[in-house]
Length: 305
Image (cartoon, rainbow, N blue to C red; front, top):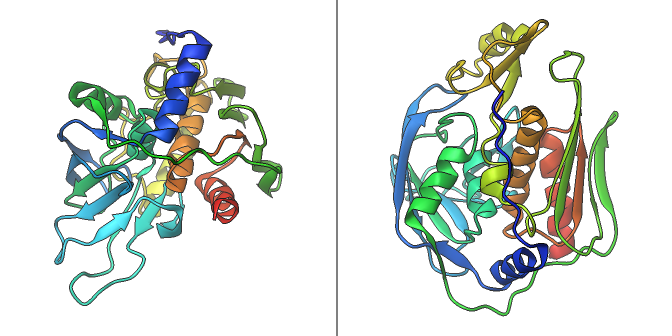
């Protein structure tokens, strides 16, 4: 089993870097491109990520559609949350049709986790490529081109004052007031190879590229046929997703001993990035889903105003 150990920097220095990223918006130094198949559609798409002006935020552009409609990577643009997060144009105009883009969470997590606040994401299809099933390829591309400050800003992170939460049965996602931003996730599966797992990540202390980005999406062997009959995971394979059965993993080795829960945390980072910037809070999730992630994001958006 291969484990990627995160490289810790001094907590004070890292926290200063994180606070600087909050108050000073950043974008890419130059553009990069990646291509691949979508997890659910199986369609091949090309993605070009370009620098954007300060304050424009992260947004998608469907370059394959008439009028090249823009889809903001904002929580108000969320349309569907079944096994991925899908965005769509808030309002179709006479020159641009209603457009959608699916499975945005890994790319958005990579951008947010790398400190990229403003980015134009051009895509020629309806689903972001899955690549290797993690955010690692996206982060590597960002590191290759580099990140630059858009321009100085007086903006500061929103400090949560009171707890917020959403739940469904025993699954929940919550946000608690805290002195620094932290993400904590827990999962519990009957399969022995997964079982109970927890992981916590503090952006100001630990590298997203090392600790979270490499964690791949995972599925359960007994659910695969049912999902395919429902028109899902057409692009999934043992090359881009971990698959677990009763006797263990079908395609080891894992990149971390607790890779599944790290990937769930990655999804949470991507979904909460739809707020534009992460509030200063401790985000705690247990057995949650994209649906619960987005429900909490909407509550937080109301608080931020």
